[in-house]
Length: 446
Image (tube, rainbow, N blue to C red; front, side):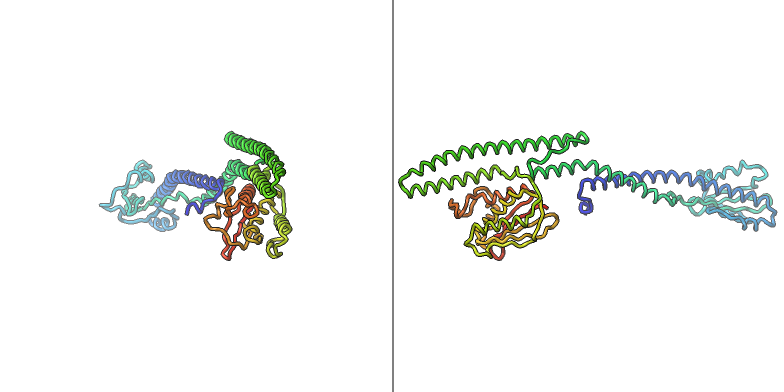
């Protein structure tokens, strides 16, 4: 559940964790600050209550006896203070003793040090029925008792009206800074991922800029070094294969010349056919290994038009097929970026494979979904066993066991098509159709 709620990007997750950590630290700091204010609140409230209590005592003491009740009634008492006049003290025998800390907090110890004319004849202090309450009884000079109940209000560390607003403003400002910082820090990782994706599609992609913090520069330099080694490896392999192709064509040409001098027409025909097949296999093998399409630049192209062109050329090459054997269904235009010659070769291989083994080739282009374009090349043949759907993409792997190029080819058409499509960031897989036949599912990123 937690993983589903987290953002998918590294920047988002970093921002979430940093924001949560900051909010916890900020809440802890504000809590400590609020708890520190509790002592100040208690001290301030207790001082106010004790000052008002002593003020009431002086007022009652100086007032005429017949006006004490009315004056006490008219006095507006603060929260936590109650008083009345009585002939009996409110402090009764058996009541618990007052805590010394609470007595000092209300400054009741100053009663004994007050001026003689304001000093009560007798003063009693005890704990009240609730925690934090003191019962004080002070006897007036003429006999009555002034009873007061002093209560310390409960602490309110979060009573500030601006506390929540301040907390939200601080969190919002911190979140903005965290998002800005994480995006800047994660930007090199995104650039590295895009560079790796470009390198997978085009081995000649431009190098990654080596700028930023030392760790980023080190990673970019290592990536550029790896890309240069890959380019050098591909170049060396291409050069080696070109030399091998040149060396193989020379003896094939000599054998063809010698075959022309054979007197037996049947043997000469068979030998020339074998040499033609050998030369075709060598050319196909070299083309597969060399991958000439890797050096072709990537440009914007119309894939729908390219599909129709491939089908038109296939129809021209097979005039014996009925018109309905080759068809295209899909949008009239579909723009993508890719290497036109390479994509045309891949599609031509898939269409040729459908025509060779299924007798038909129907290309269906679906609407793009989530940035992925799907293309289906369908035929109405017999299909292939499920266990061989992936094996046919191995080089030289053919389900038709003969080596006749007219029936089975060289076994490189599908591997070449997959190599080209994967170099574009896509792929191709084979599936048996429920209604019969085979479908090649091509996926390409937009």
